Image (cartoon, rainbow over all chains, first blue to last red; front, side):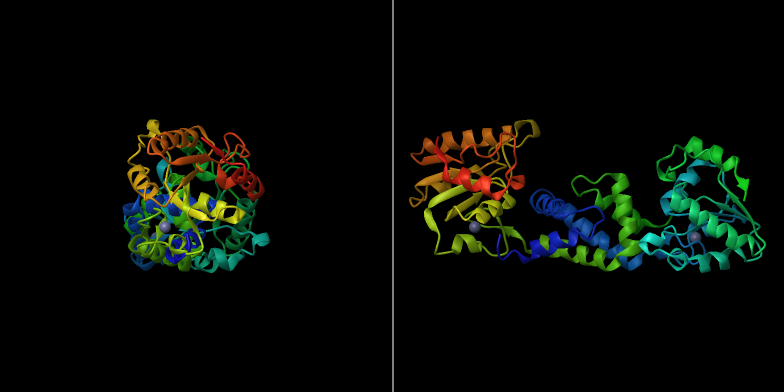
Length: 198
Length: 198
Ligand SMILES: [Zn+2]
Ligand SMILES: [Zn+2]
């Protein structure tokens, strides 16, 4: 076990993954080197490729490999409707309900003062610029129905209403305390159809 | 979320890690790209470096970056004692007890017929060659005290005794069903001192 500096470096690096402690990191390193070196090489290359090529859409802020993502470029979508979500996963969930044909803005987070996550960290200046382009007429807030998601929705609502925009929120069909990612598409569909002005 | 092929590739590749399902993989990918690109690049390089440089010690089978590991090359160790463990982590635990000054053989696994893991997968031919070098006089079996670890110890014990070697097993100070990695060093120390002939 001495001299294995590359193994030690790998074990330490695996701890950069969220939710991975020292024991898990060690097990992952052993597993990859003992049973899945192809997987290790594949993951290594995937990480470097993603870091090099994945960036943020200049319009909606989601992950993309081009300046503007495919969704934002889709001419079939209604540019007067803008749906604000916390993550790309949440956007995907809403897309699956087939109830929304507008465009998106992805915060890539939520306000969380206790964790030091403020308005700048969730790109609210970029959202204001996007929502006040003169084309958007309604902003649908689809942040999670957790405390932080609700506070984020409230903050954004006040901010955008002060700029004369119509703002709505998904109806409370989504269970209180629930995270969109884990709610069934039917519930989200109803909540989208029942969205209310705020 | 479309066009992000490198993100999809990364998410899929993260599932090669043991215990990581589709949701965890997605969260890990988002986290790295959003909050820790340095960590992602570090991990990517560490994986490729480890795959390229880490191999197995020709004598004890553990991970090493040289033909023979430092432990096997240590002239202070008693070459007549050979301790058989399942993993490098188990070896490290035994080292920490300071009760064993011999050499090791690391199986990198355990017999598990239900998972299709047989004698060849845990390098038993390499172990026989190692244990019958004419210098080793006692083999201490320190596989886990799980069903599979016990079966592995029994199998190895019969195999080595048939070749005239003295074989011992860590005393049952280790709780039945316990895994060495999670047992305190004091218990392992007692079990090492109380090891019994099999
Ligand atoms: Zn976009
Ligand atoms: Zn060695």
